[in-house]
Image (cartoon, one colour):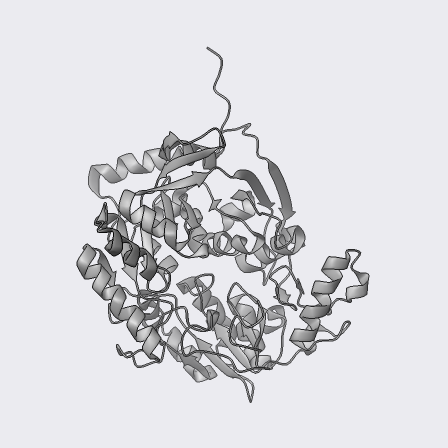
Length: 472
């Protein structure tokens, strides 16, 4: 018998979860280990189960978390900002009760953004497949699991059968080598990747991140990278687990214990792409080439280094790209050639599944310590989970934030998307640590500039987009 062909980590995980092949066209029935449900994308799935008289196949393989529509005001109550949100949360609780699924509601001390909550509870482990009704489920790739977002009909299929109809993706490896320069974070690295490959550069691919710069990142930094690569069109992301991942998982409430833990660690550390595994596409980046980044347009790939200028559309060779740039500049109210550091802001927001973990808050606090938010800027920090909030308070970060003039709020998706009461007004301009800067994303007519949490802190203090390297 010949030697088995070297396999990528993605292919190994998919092979291990394939129940059967469905046709000659590459469709398979894929076993899904877990899902996390939110109040925004799950209602129709549960309504479908109710209409068909079906049960949930394995209620213990799901967790329900309220995160999208809840208010984040400093004083937390059950009250929702509007009747629609109230009904969503109410129906969510009904479904949890009727189908026997665990629920972290708004007042639960473990509540938070689903992609922050699942890893901190120890629900995400290397080699797992996790599918959920939110595109940023790719975050779990940081822990060696394959995570991806699914639509509502797929959620219903998953709940009823623990499986999904799935088509295998092409594979892309993004290798980032070298040391990250001063002031550069995981967010800057992934923003630079997206700028280079484009907002559709990873469409149809599962991305594996590798290289010494990725190895050097914390698990939180890797989560930022895996979450944000969705903005280049990726439909899955994964990073091979290492000791950092095991240290992150160990001792968490739902993590394996005792002898099982030892056996699991052995298996997890052995799980990676084989030497010589061939990827359909390879992208390489030197970490030393990355600078602190900001977006200037209305797509995450419309980005530049903070010390740069707003680009001129007539320099774009492609007419489609030129048209997109013109529209973006018009919406953003910017003129070609103006220094990015001259753009004044009205709001600063630190939060979201991409950048609201404890490490992100520490980064922001380092910039804000002993400084004040500029006159006329409304600045807010929304931790990724109630647990992150408690940890930040135990470290005294909340005092740093409030003394600097930031609002210190409760956890939730908040101003990442205009689906709760944290909404920008038309013409407001926000320095934001979130993942999307589409037209109207943070409110109709609102303008969003994406950047790292430390860069948001610097912008809040300067009252304009600013280079964090000048705030050492």
